[in-house]
Image (tube, rainbow, N blue to C red; front, side):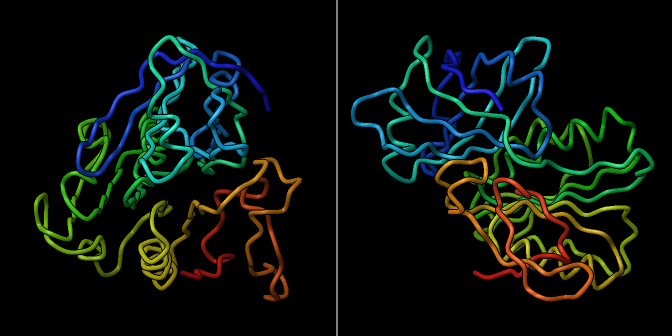
Length: 263
């Protein structure tokens, strides 16, 4: 875990209507330690910035160049302050944080299910799976419209990509579950996005006896387990009783069978 003032290399709006921004940072020490599925805590170094940092999933890791990328959506005061920053300025970054995706060396066939801003954090996973030589990578992405499907070109290089949009402006009209087939044969299903979508992906996987990992989102204060602001209910693997875990510390990635999917 490293705290640094990272130089901003790029900070630009990539979707006009959906208000998505891409930010690339020079942070060599964090980049060397970062893994797919981890996140960082960021705050703009400005007088009107919010006191608390904002958690941001890592969208790309370039260890050789010492850079990291995030994609964020304009939602409130924190992201608005970030959107005003320009290349050459600095932003305070704490990371890498949390436990990322768990990838086994013997995986041969996997499915990635992403929606909304959660799509961004699946990209480094897809890259790593491809680098490890996973033979079959099915990628299912969903969103309200074509504007909400991000990183599509990069995903297309790493697997068989299927798109679902609510308005039918890209891919098939509907939700991601239109691509959930009977009797799937995957070593793992990975999912990140809105809770209802992850619930559907988890139910689909578990009902067919497949392993599934999900990446949860919660409001965070510190990002490293001290403030207890991101505690969520989970199931104890042995007793089945409720236990509480910190999304920032024990997560954000959990085995799907542990999770209570509360909207």
